[in-house]
Image (cartoon, rainbow, N blue to C red):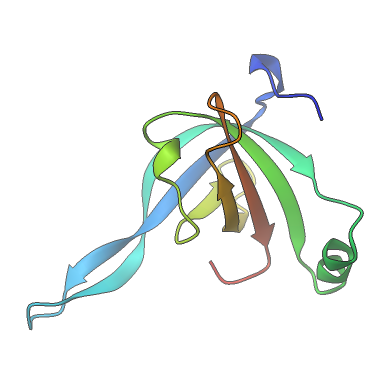
Length: 115
């Protein structure tokens, strides 16, 4: 699979993480999602496997997403969510690969599931 280039980063995505709220007893609890940063991305279909085909039957779409590696994108974890800025679709971050290629962060994301 060829690596993305600057011309293939056609989508604008935002990444949100949950805020931490003081519960009044010295503890923190997870609050609402807050936008942390936006960047350009390339979406790639994840077609072909039985798990992906079964997810489509349940109304889920699974994509592989490339974003440039940066200090912000290397902080991504599966606790975050991704939003397509133009379409407004919200994706749960299923997996994050920051190791394989130092220039790119590869995400597996899925729509139609709780983020």
